[in-house]
Image 1 (cartoon, one colour):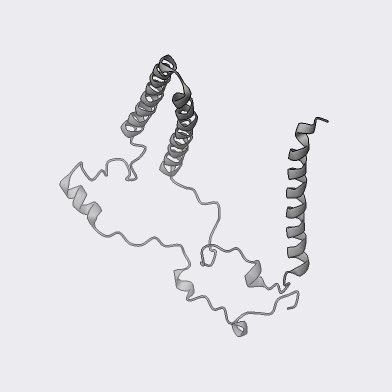
Image 2: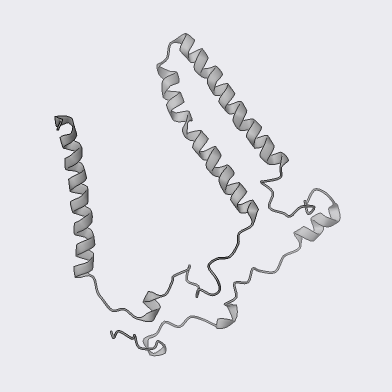
Length: 169
């Protein structure tokens, strides 16, 4: 084994030992008082109701994919900037032309997304700029989104309201 790998292996060994020690310490020293409220799914303080397999609109996925693509593309600017700063005059000119082509491809992709109306959240034909009557209709306050558990009342967390845990306390 080469001596250049020894520091890397020592760092990996230390990381594994520390992670194992934390998990084992948490298991051995942590309190164990399970009951059904602690074992239920936590969803932002709301009682989970309904299916977890709800469909999201396609527009959500398209915007997410576009964001990831543009975000990943921007990561390429950092190595380009380093290479640009260390190059001679001819290399800098080449790097500048290279980046101009790169940015042009991004602009074309952005214009395509705008043309395909991917970044609009309103359904087809409901654009606010199409018709003043439609714009007024869209400006009206819409009813709040219902999650299906609004009538369940407030969540009570006092011990007397909770049933006993099947495993004991």
